[in-house]
Image (cartoon, rainbow, N blue to C red; front, side, top):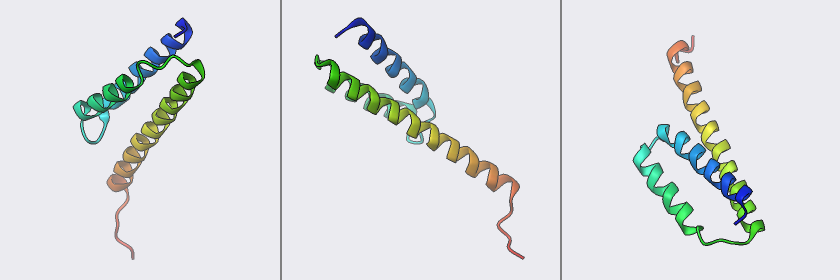
Length: 86
């Protein structure tokens, strides 16, 4: 694996690990799943396949960010808006 791809993979792993701290099922659950996913693909040598896997990881990052944003939005809405309909 080229050094640039290696650094991208490490950066992706660190970002996902950071985002996993707030995962609804717990950080330990997320960390185990993340490690398993990365170990499953550790022997991949094709640069194109590695780029596809990196793109998938970036998609997961966007999905996690959306999940967290939605959770915060729902908490704020619940806190400041009543469900009473006049």
